[in-house]
Image (cartoon, rainbow, N blue to C red; front, side, top):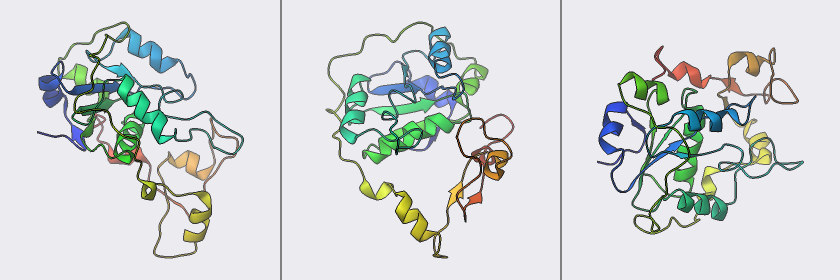
Amino acid sequence: MTFSTLIDASALRELVGKPAIAVIDCRFDLMNPEGGRRAYLAGHIPGARYADLNRDLSAPVTAKSGRHPLPLPKDFAFTLARWGIGNATQVVAYDDAGGSFAARAWWMLRWLGHTSVAVLDGGIKAWTAAGATLESGEEKPLPRETPGGRILPRADSAALIDTADIAAFLTDPKHLLVDARAAERFAGSVEPIDAVAGHIPGAVNHPFSANLAPDGR
């Protein structure tokens, strides 16, 4: 069975440790960039690789790039190979932030055409609540060959839009721009990260947290 959207903890327990399964720990703290890595070392799903938002899921920041620009497709394809992810790999991403960081890894894999990727519903809290164990320390060595051969850096250009296109679309009622951040950041009343508070004119707010039940799933 292929998982391409969500996977629950019980289903993941049946897959962990099997060939052609890759689990990615995407925990990250925007206010403490090393916090996710420390959390991984303290305890992670057995066999998981650690995906650092700044180093693995983003390109270096430039004066015009914004906070977390996408890496070049070839660079991300190299990262996937380093994690042992190939064309025949079922990938599962998780975090401890309602899926917000895991969803980025999920989207980036699909951006390169790899659809066998899912987010762990409820994240690491759902894993431990199901009675599953964690392991600590650094990543374990991987086999030299990736299942099904390496993923090629063939990115879907239609999956991206630039600021000029957004500016044009905002005058067209057939398009809708959705801001998935928290309501207070959308309103500009709180802004702990970015230099300018508020939102793009014409956007509507639907916080990603509104998609979650009280248990985080």
